[in-house]
Structure formats: C-alpha cells, structure tokens
Image (cartoon, rainbow, N blue to C red; front, top):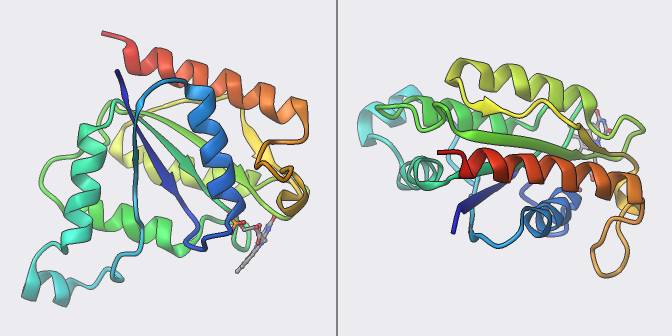
Length: 179
Ligand SMILES: Cc1cc2nc3c(=O)[nH]c(=O)nc-3n(C[C@H](O)[C@H](O)[C@H](O)COP(=O)(O)O)c2cc1C
C-alpha cells in the first residue's frame, strides 16, 4: 500500500486547500495517509546554530522521505505561495540529504480569485525545482472562487475540477507504484 503524504499550505482549520487535499486523497485511492504540519519556527540561522534542526522540521523531512508520493495543496497569497510553504522548503533544505529527490509530487491549489492560484502554483514549481522531485506537470488543478467551490460534504461542485483532480491523482499513483 503506497504512503501518500498530504501537505496543506494553509494553516487555518477551515482552509479550502484542506478540503481540496481531502478530495485529492479520495482520488488517489487506498493508501496509508500521512499529513504534514507546516507550523514551524521561522527559519533563523542563529536558531539553527544554537539548537540544531527543530523537531517539527525533522519530522517533516522524515515524512517526505517515507512517502511514496506527496501532494501539496497550496493557496495563493498575493500571487505567490504563502510564507509557511517557502519557510518549510528552506528548513527542509538544511537537513542532510534531500528527501525530495525523485519523489513523485503533485501540486493542487484552491484560491479566492478567478485564476485558482495559477501564479502561486507556477511559483511553487520553480521553488521545488532545486530539489529535483518528479513533479507532475498536469493536468493543472486550479480551483477558483474556492469559498464557493465545495458543497456541504466537502466535495467539488464542478465536475471539471473533479475530473482534473482524478486524472492528476491517478498519475501520481502510477508514479508512486512505478518500480
Ligand atoms: C494574505 C492573502 C493574500 C491573498 N492573495 C490572493 C491572491 O493573490 N489570489 C487569490 O486568488 N486569492 C488570494 N487570497 C484569497 C485566498 O485565495 C483565499 O483566502 C483562500 O481561501 C485561501 O486558502 P484557504 O482557504 O486554503 O485558506 C489571499 C488571501 C490572503 C489571506
């Protein structure tokens, strides 16, 4: 059974990206589910020198390393990924070894605007490039007007979004199961 790590890029409990992540898990199919917590201290070289790698960062690194596939649900803040996402990437890069290397990774986004977080998603792709994951290129899952995009059960209302999500997560599963 593959291990799927979900990384919610928004911290708030009612996050639409968390809803999207839950739907992505369903589309991926049966898996051992794991979830990351990006509530990490801000990267600070002095903190690192004094105390080493924070426990939460090491846990995240271990989760990425153990996962067969990773899906990141990333909001858009001012046309870019939220600071918590970049902060997490920076911390993870400080740990010996690179847990992202060759890891199958899919990005999805839900955002209030019409673009569904397209610029954020594009920027996140660039941010991940140095770590050389197996980053899926499409179909792009960009859920626009996200506060109105889910029904009361947390399902996507628009069948086109659901179709794109199913396709993307199907590909992620194939990558995860590739020998
Ligand atoms: C600081 C901030 C900046 C935002 N900038 C954008 C933006 O550039 N584009 C956009 O579509 N939505 C933007 N939004 C709206 C978010 O997409 C919306 O709040 C979304 O629901 C956030 O994701 P979440 O539901 O997972 O928390 C912004 C929200 C915040 C708090």
